[in-house]
Length: 389
Image 1 (cartoon, rainbow, N blue to C red):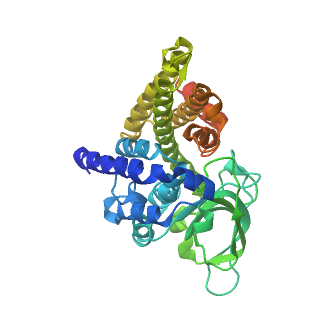
Image 2: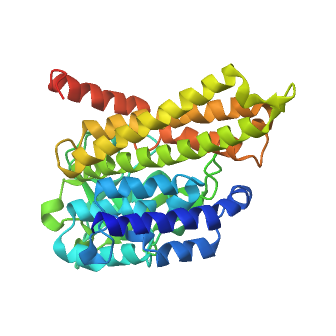
Image 3: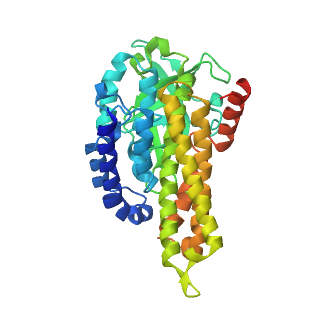
């Protein structure tokens, strides 16, 4: 898709977010639910498949185009983006990165249209930052019919309560141990016997973006559920890492969008709030906080644009995504903190946008690889390159 078409899509999403989603932010935060009309509108706009190739019904955006779109989604509650984020991101990319042609043709159109909501089932209680420690197993089924039997429990799975399908990562029961070897990815439909989704997690922030525990108890799936077929056996860990690289750039762009919203909320409040008979925007210490946030936003935007270009050109699909996610997720936390500081006591009151975003922003430093994991990835890559670009 050419850039002029993408510019129209981005402008349309910008209008929709600001006119339709922003007025419902407080409602979503208080009810922990995104209204059905927003879900339907997102599907109608093609947002469930913006990163999925056009041949499968998606928009086929490049990474550079995607980050432009996602910044607009970052302007509002993360719950809206979460509705379709996994279809385009870590769950949909399991199919794009690892599936057979037949699997792509069968399943990707369902994700792109919004017919299916997909979940990425990797994290476990003892396998978060290091998925190589996962304990979920997959063993060859006994008797006629072939297939696999999956047992294990996944934790903090985004969209689990509304998921139609799970991309499940499991270790071959005949290949015990830890690390990348022996892990495969399976497509498991939500209604399969033995799949149980727990109650929604009650989180600090990001209300409306549902996560839950998912239990797989003797879940039997056909051989066709193995992502990539026989060639995909034991390739699940590598597939997951490629999916996470894309997802990290996506989250970095989301953070920049949220930081821009926070900055504008801060500036508007500073110009309207008076102290000693004049707007607090006239006080230099307040100006210093605003200047730091503006500089952070500039740096974050430059970082994701450079990293997205390198990703599209396949020049750097490891260090750049991690560096971008690390910087931008930390950056939005700083901008949120300054926003609350400028608002003073008002910024600590429920119902005020910066208070909500302060809580929402905290999660970005944890999921899709903590800041500490990004530090490890970046350092290892820099050391391997002897510090060269």
